[in-house]
Length: 411
Image 1: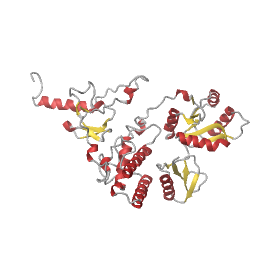
Image 2 (image 1 turned 180 degrees about the vertical axis):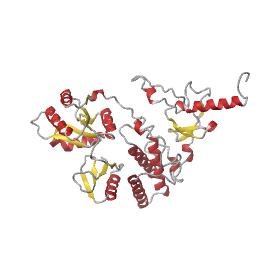
Image 3 (image 1 turned 45 degrees about the vertical axis):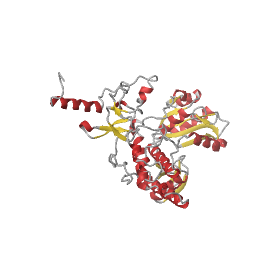
């Protein structure tokens, strides 16, 4: 589970380092000391530091376990993904009818399923029915917080929550999320106020990131290189802070267009860092499809190749005879027309697949339709009437040719 820092813990008068469920593992007089402990324990468990948490909560979402998050001891993935999406915005309060004696087993099941939550309550008095217990607990929560939603597979429990004025959801109505999807709208960030476009193109790492993340990356560099030295590994296994910052920045940028639901931007970026460190250490990627950061490897690394980020040989004009009708970079899933460079004839937009800028009027064999096109059977596709930037550019080019007398009747 991720670790956080907070100055709102009732069990610490200063800055506390806490687990995801709020348990204090360290109480400190300064924020930096709390950050240092959070980073240290996160690195020890190979995870991204959770950052600062405000315990004065957001709105609460009450969630059941059995039949909602877990069945037969295993996570119900679509429901876990849904709750994890809510975790970034709401305080997830698990209220289960399980007895306290099942706490250890329950926490393990939730951890194995990857459930993200803030607090959990067990039924302390098994002589009280589950429905009555849940209603009483919900009333206690309502006395201190606003409750946005209660998710429970038991119709009687949902009725009890409704009696208190709490909106409810039957988890059966939750649809499976794509394993690869754009970030939530609020997280679809274009560019950076701190880091200009192209800042992650090299190994120098002139990139600004928050203090906790930079400390985590710095410690990763130290631990990794010390281990490589101790094992007398080749020099190409080493990494630098500048390189890891570039990898992290690329991962954070890619999150807007491609991520696994339930994973936050920072976690997505740090996962890419971990994948890069594995590649640096072992000499090959854990996932063969991971080739997008090979240009950041040590020049003697067996997988290093600046060309790995170049466009494929089959990148060609979309009007080529062998290109299927209606397909072009400009309407590809990986094409981000909000991130452009150049102008006029040289206008190009960012391709998340190849980590390069491409011409919207070109095409390559990696072309994929947008997510909504692949899911048309589930909902009516919302068609954007805005003219794509690559078409607007082509139109301007045509007008320029016309003005020069290079187009028109008879040509």
